Structures are given as C-alpha cells and as structure tokens.
Image (tube, rainbow over all chains, first blue to last red; front, top):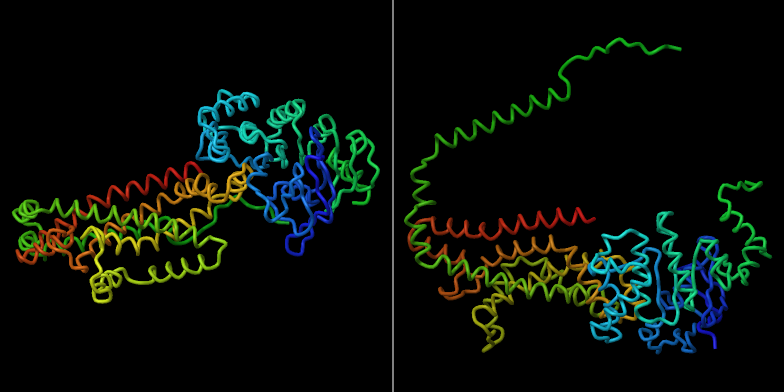
Length: 251
Length: 274
C-alpha cells in the first residue's frame, strides 16, 4: 500500500484552476521531488496532502485513510505528516525547545521530560543542540529552518512535506538545510519535497515529478527527468533553471 | 548648447529657514505675553485658597482619600479583568466561521461602543426597577465591575480582534500541521502572540478605564464605597472648597502617568523587535 495516494485531485482558487486532475502516489521510504515553474500548482499539491488546502474534487489517502473524507479525524491524521514551510513559521513566542515540545505535550500528551528528551534528540540531529534555549528571532534563516525540521520530526511523522524549504534562505545558508534533508533521506524518511534545488533533486530524489499548468507533465528517476527530459515544457523549464542567464532565441 | 555657468543666482527675500525662525520668535513672544497677563491679572491668593489649600489636602487624606484611591484601583482592576475576558471571547466570536456568533458579537460591540458609558451606568442604577428583587452579588463591587466591564469588553474586543488578525496565517498553518485542533492552536499559538501585539493599546484602554471608574457615583454607591471622584466631590461640597477634588485629580495622575510611560516603553519595544 502506498503511503500517499492521490486520485483525480482538482483545486481552484476562484476562477483559477490550479490542480487539474492529479493522480499521484508516494511509496513508503521514497524521496520524491516536485519541480516546476511558479504557479504550476506544486505547492498547492503539497498542501493538499495534509489538507491545508481543501480540494474541490478528488481523494487523498494517507496510509490508506481517506483524509478528504469529511468525517476523517484530520488532526490525528496530520500528526503523522510533518510539514516544513518556506517561511519557517516557527512560533516566535516560544523557545527553540518549546517549539519542538508544544505539540508533543498538547497533542500527543507526552510528559514534559519525555517530550524534551525527544526534542533535544531531534535538535541534535539537525545540528542545533546548543540553541535549545534561544528564541527564533535570535537565529539565522538556516538555523530557523532546521529548527522547523526538528519540530516536525519531534512528532515522529511517517511522512515529511517540504514546501520550498530553502527558497527564503540566503544562498550561503542553503547547504546546511539541504545537508539535514539529505541525512533524513538516508535515514529512510519518506519525503515529498517541492524545490528549485536541482542538484539536490538529482542526488537525493528517488523520483522527480515535473508539474506545469496544474498537471504532472512527466515523472521518473532524476537521471531521466532532469538528465534526459522527454517533454518540451520540461526541457524549457530546466534550461531556464539550470542556466538563468541563457537567452531564448525567440525572446 | 549653453554651458552652465558658475555665477551665483540672485534671490530676494528671506530663506525658508529664516522665515520659519522669524515665525517661531513671534509665537514665543505671544506665549510670553499670555503668561505675563495671566500672572498679573489673576488673584493668586484666592486661587490657592480654593484649589490648593494645604489644610484641606491634609484633611482629605485624613478622611480617607487613600481608601478612595484603593477603591478606584479595585474597581478598575476588576472591570479590566471582565473586559479582557469578555473582549477576548467577543473577538473570537467576531472572527468565527459561525454566522450567529459573528452577528451577536458585532451587535454587542457596535451597541456598547456607540453608547456613552454614562448611559450604561444610569441604566444600571435603574436596573432594580426592571428586575424587581434582582441583586448583583459582591455589593458594591459586583455592579461596578459589571457596568464598567460590559463597556470595556466592547472596546477591548476590537483591539484584540486586530491583534489576532495581525498574527501571520502561517502560524496557524504550522500549528494545524502539527495536529493541533483549531481551539488549541488559538490558545497556545495565536492568542499569546496577539496579546503581545496589542499590549500597548490594551494598556491605553486600562488608562481610559481608570478614568471611567469615576462614573461609578452615578450608580449610587454608599459613601464607604466612594472612589476618588465621588469622595473628592463629596468632600468638596461639604467644605465648600475645591481642594479635595483637585487632590483626587492628582491621585488619578499618580495612576495614569506611570501607565502612560509604560505604554510608550511597550511601543518602543514593539518597534524595535519589528
């Protein structure tokens, strides 16, 4: 059974039809990178997996449970889906440690000492054990994003969603976050990553999905999709991303 | 093509700076004249006698000015708590996705915000006419807290609503993505940040509340329940001298001035962290 299964997903914002009938699965232990131009619907697809966006049509199954069912225990389902945001969204009024324990204590009903132990272990995993008492405002962007990863991991998720996790970072800080994500992938975490980091996708992903105009244009191993794309749209996109200074002959 | 020359341009008259300076000197001169006129025409002896007579200041404190000060603080504090709790509930209702909650709180806020507080107090003083035999517990605190708190809640609801809306949407999304139900996310994540944002304007509302507590005398409290204004007015009437009322006024400033400084500090701090 696939960990995530999406059937005929349709999502519109007003008259803007963002997702046009997406069918898509993520297997246990798989690392899937979603690439595509801005406005292609890749972030919306990711946000439909934990229902931060409510699709108009279609079904989303996580571990066989249909979370698009109106009577689904959505909060329980979300506990097993970790999410990392482009803008980090750390809780500014809580310390780094409390950011990682608040949901453990209030949602999973873990004892504080136990929650802190798990939080410390995850903060060590992202290389920030010396920052436990700091507040988000005292951290760099890269550190904040790693705390956000530790916060999501502290819930022991079965799946991690990454929504352009390095897009808001200064270039020299991107590497720290990608290193943590690479380690996570090696540890066998199931990951669905929306990203513009082609080198990361090529190296870490088991599968790359190229989206454009609300549909999946092509998907497959990174060597195929990034190395030898079959569709013209994919080729155009990759040429622009991999060589931003390249000038199209027609333009 | 003409080449720009280095010749200086001739301009007539005063420069803008000189003109501003001249107008400021004129303003200072007017101010000095006004002060001098006031100083020489007023009967200072009589003014001091009516407003600042030391023996009446002394007798005001001997007769219980401090008790009245404490009463003012108690009335304000209780009303602030009711306003804060009520305002938070109203703000959450106003932002609710449930229609009737929204309508109810909007109606409440618009009604009590548009009404002079004094009208609410008069209504409270006449309440026994409408509901015979009804008593509000903890006399006199119960009535005062309720009357002040009902009005304060309407004001604070709008402030708190603005604060809740100022918390970025990503905060709720992060909380919900961790599996927090909506109510828990509001309590643990949104409200603490919202209150931090509205601390300066809420302190402002507290200052207003301190002053509004002077309306309590309208409810018709007993003499031993007088707050500053009621006490000062009473004593001023019996002694036919305004000094007790002026003393009460200064007691208000003792409360409100530090609060004003606190607001400015909080605002400066909020500006720094932004």
